[in-house]
Image (tube, one colour):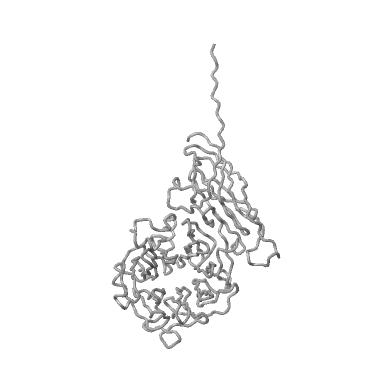
Length: 525
């Protein structure tokens, strides 16, 4: 008797789940898509990577309004017990300390609004020095502004026409000035903001030619003690380092080294961060502590993880005005302003100074940045209407001047523990910590595809009030943070997948710690 053979039963695809941390590792534009850490992101716009979660960035609000032209410089005078902010807009300076419409100009009749500045404390008081290479230097003593010339005045500089000075720096209790389109630097007597200026010509040390772009002060604090160095950076990327206190005395002025780095990007090519200095160069964003002791072929840039993005931006926009690094310690942020279209469209690369993770902020159209007290401020562009430029307070509140903040994130591609096996993605559950209700737009990009979510998310939440802006008990405060973890259906079939998410917010704080996925697993591809 012949028995009929039964066909083997096809087993149904098995459902699996996986939980993946939010991309706290930040933006990655360096590694292969197939080799990124699960905590990295291919896209991370307006999401700031923290230590334990990723947060939608905070917003901005107009602070000082009614300015007549693009705000291209923000200058802060820091006194013993108070600070004041000033904006250069068009051909004038305006006091922007108060949250209000600006009054009359405090300095007028200027040629442009692109100024470099430095604070200097002397036995006679605290001063803010400003130079732009075209106008006479301007100085503020905490009460009044004065033009600095070589003639008799409360404060005067002789030996050099201050209209040729384009950058200023303080080193060894002296003010040093960079002369425009030359390799000369000028310096004043100790603890002085006026007097006879002496020159130091660095041209013999710049074998690549060019001119002196900037001077900064670098402090090294190690077992040997604290040592300050004067750093001179040429337009061609040559760096000369000196120590000592008086360039006129050979025994007190020692050359400690000469190095070659990438070309600096603009006059505002550095920012002091703790004892280090971050440089903007054609090699990326470099810490001075590594740039001067490491071969250029080694990856010492703090921007190494976003190298492809930075390189592309430098190639396209390096000549545009508006490049500037700014250190914002209260927010644990280092920002680098990128002028995509000078005076019209800008965005920022932002690094978490605790973890070193990067993201990108879009929506802050800023020509320049400054910190005043514990706040971060930017100088905005002129709009379509007259006198529509403003100084904005950034990293503040939960909306961009009342409008939505749109965040876009695409996680690293993930094999979810089963490389080489086909998966059908069915559900995703991003987990959020927020004080309001929210909805988002999700998509799954499979096998290294890139499909931007086309739907616009809606966001609704409780209307809250910033702490300290009203009287206790007179209106509802935002509710405490709640966990939102609704499942949403997603569609995708392939070996590996990346979550593509878009979110909108204008009312509440939003934090994203993790995402859970459900998928069916099939056979080997």
